[in-house]
Image (cartoon, rainbow, N blue to C red; front, side, top):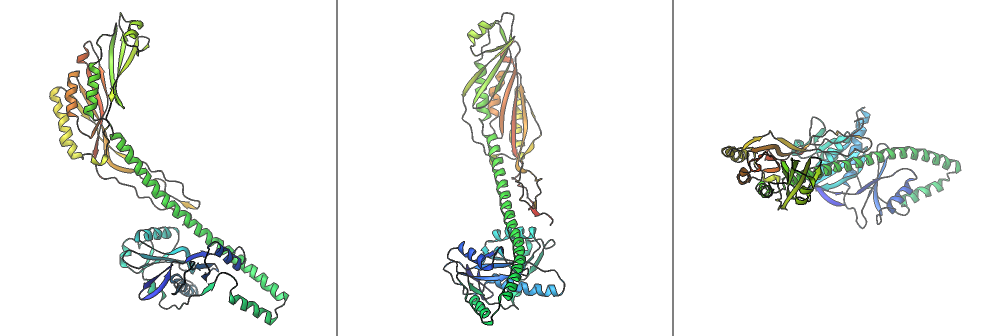
Amino acid sequence: MQEIKIDGKTLAIGLEWDALKRESSQSKEIKELVKNNPGVKHGILLKSTEDEIVVGMIPAGEKIKSPSGAAYLAAANKKENAINKKNDEPLKDWIVVEMVDNDKFWLCVIKNGIPLPGFDFLDDWNGIYSRIVELLETSDFDLYVSETNFNTVIDESEYNVYQKGYKELTDKVKYKNNVRLLTGTDPKLLMVIGGVVLVGMGYFAYDYWQTSQQEQEAIERSNRESQQQNADSLKAQQRYEEQKKEVLKAAFKNAEDSLNGLLSQARPTQLINSWVSLLDSIKTSHNGWDISSVECGTGQVATCTISLKRGELGVNKTLVEDFPDADINGDNANYSLKGNVFSVVVGNYKELPGVKEFKIDVSTDLQLMKYAEVKHAIDASTEITQEVKLPEPPKGFNQEMNIEPIKMGVAAGALHLEGVGLWQLKGVADVLKSKTITIQKITLSVADDFKTAAWKMEGIYYVKVGEPVLPTIPPSKRIGN
């Protein structure tokens, strides 16, 4: 609880408002409420237009010296709704926002003529705005704001927004704090009991009163249950809205990590040079077996797989004697060579070049390789996206689940290179230095002369096409609204 000033009037705000369940007597429920809030002794009781009761508890060790701002607004709301009811006009619930200083705002919500529990507090604009949006989406409120700049962020065509503040709403209302003792026996109650004894009310009068009281309490309990269900439902929706924000945040983090993982590989120059070393080490003679093809790939180390086919003089024994790791399958066999462990370069998608830079620098380098009889082809790129899967909404609410994917602002496409001999590869390695390219594999088609084997290389290029774009997730809505 704290005090603020609005137009020179000092108000107490931030009381802990809680609604009675109305499942037993009022005194028992107040006693239970005090038990669950150690140290609380005094509070304010307010009754709604539907006979619901809320208790504004004064924190332990504190005294309320000024009128409760929430109670004042509740009195003003009741007065206005009494006029509306007389004129057969709809009753109104309020959301009231007051700027306390440049970065703090007071939010108070009045529903059915009483403060809505949990909505009498100070916060910054971001916190206040998110709660306003949740409230407007879940119920029919009139929004009162004293500052004109609020209207620029609230859609006045969709909601009832009024440029009127606390002062205008309460100008013609008189209210005095009805602070009462919540613990022990209230002196006012003793006076009532004493009065009953003095007038000598008999058993039948008491029985009639008790029956009426029980009926009234049943009605109030039903109303309270409805109020509690609304409050619980609103809290569940608020938790769900926070869950959606966390899901979106986690999906974006996962997309960033995945994209950086794709870029965190050995640079093409290092990889191709490792392949060249492995290819140079391949023996031209395999004891009657002929090389049919060679394929080199990447991972933690460069790896080349040599595929063989049985020649006229090829037998299993001589092949295994020279190549113990050979895997023989009928007239075909293969074995692998592995290079040294790579020093992986950690990728960062934010450092990728843009499309224009790629076309000027990387594409030009690729085009120049034609003078060394190396051909290249660049496929069209596709922007990288990340799907967002929302959790199921709480019971009683609908949520649009078909959410646009996160756009990472990075596009990727396939890159193809091919040449006529191994002598070209060292030159290709010197050209492919860009961090925008990763190489996946090279395949050699071997004829009689291994050194003149034609080759094809496959890679992926990445370019930055913009900044990441996160989708706007519509708020959940109460079923029936």
